[in-house]
View 1: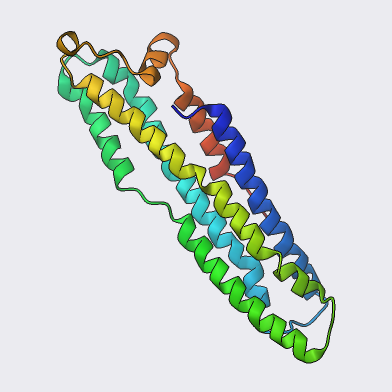
View 2: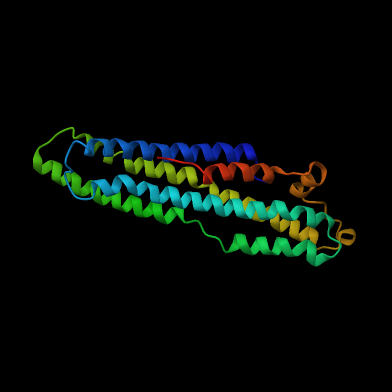
Length: 217
């Protein structure tokens, strides 16, 4: 299982990484309210980080849907009187997980390419003008490291997806087996639900939900 404490900590890291991008972009936007852009594209770049944020929210929503489908199927897995009713929700979730892809990485890669191109153009323009310590130039150069940090901060999404897939598969194996003959123990995620009425994944849905509704202005 993917522990709620770990999910919470990693989600906070992702939020902090996005906040760093937002803050940097806001500083550039503030400067551009009183200073003409040195080259075309500056205003566009200060808003492009949002594409990665929107994509990440969609990816969190995907994991939320998959997690919710898993938790909502636990009661029927335990109580259904025939095999199809036990395993069909799990098969549906296996397919849901297998066919999903994360979208944030493509948006982040595009942002990285665009910012590097802009930095090259901006550096050339500043060099030809003879200006030193240009504030926008310094802020632009902060983006690549921030993008790298964000990519690392979001890498846990794949780990979460893998852990979820493994737990769903374990429950599928258990639900579809001849329990008496095979002697399979009830999977931990399902056992927790059996005794408490909820599991770590129940808590995880709340954590994932919080990111999907996060507002970064």
